[in-house]
Amino acid sequence: MNLSPSIAAKLAIGLTGAAAISTGSYVAYDRLTKESISELIKKEDLKLLSSSDSDTEWLKRWKEYVAKGNNIWRLDNYTGKTTSESDIPQNFKDTCYSKASERTTDNKSDTYQQVKDLCTKSFSISSLIGEEKDIVLINANQGDAKWNKAWKNYIANINNNNELGLDDWPTIKESNSLNAPNDYKTKCDSKKQTEVKNTKDPTYLAVKQWCTEAKSD
Image 1 (cartoon, rainbow, N blue to C red):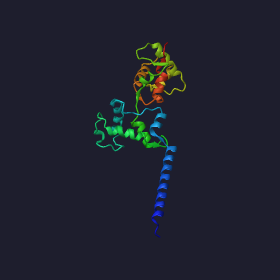
Image 2 (tube, one colour):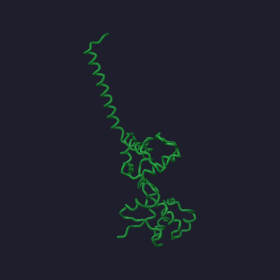
Image 3 (cartoon, rainbow, N blue to C red):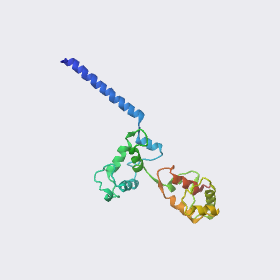
Image 4 (cartoon, one colour):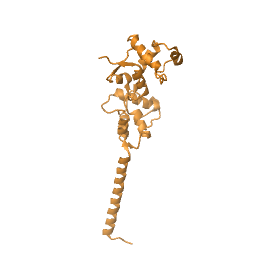
């Protein structure tokens, strides 16, 4: 059956309209059911690296990408672990920007985890503690009284599972000594230099709990 030109044109318009409606519905559904990875990152109190961040910050994540050795993003000019760790390729940054703008249903997707691991900033625990309003770190050279007070709380807490990772913890705990061992001070001093992504990190929380004192007025 031959259709007249006018009928054929109307059918074509109808099909085009239906396709447009279908596409529009998909886009609307996608926006209703998915969030941009950048928004999900914010909800976890993480900060994405941006073009305004120094290469020093980007270099931390680039080294981690190279260390993985599998070039998961198939970046051009990547040569495995022999790739320079000091020269950050622009396509690494661009891939971070691109993937952060993608949409996903939750924070379980592979792309989300990649962005979280490779495209977010990290901070030393000492710098984050420095932003706290009511506490400061106890310095290694401060008097024994401050350290002994912190230590007393550390060994008295029944829920404490040696969060600072002290050596020979069972023996130390059983001794009930009220004098802070050198290892306690050493662990506080070393862990405050650890880099974490946010203040929810267990190491940050341990340092905040056991290696600080109230700010003096």
